[in-house]
Image 1: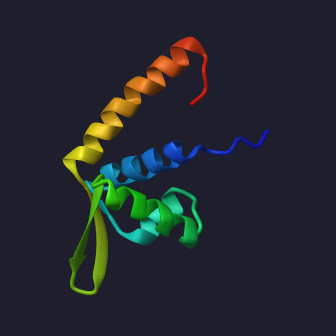
Image 2: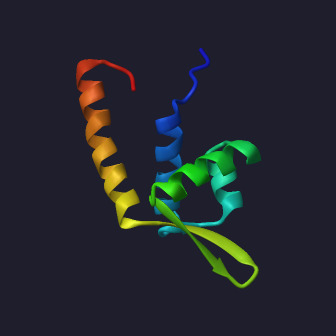
Length: 92
């Protein structure tokens, strides 16, 4: 069965990936880790940037994305929603 991820699940996947990479990750790592096309990655990064869940950090010629405190809080709160969803058998 091919189950598609919801938009919120993709956003959380990206945030968790950045968090696991010591709080900062290169776009390529996010692209492969979240299993997204370049166009979709850009779309989701823009959403996360606008909502201040991540921030862009340039170091020389390299671009990184760092998770913010707001992004960490979002992951924490989303985990509660996941647990509630599982307890009642309702998919997110």
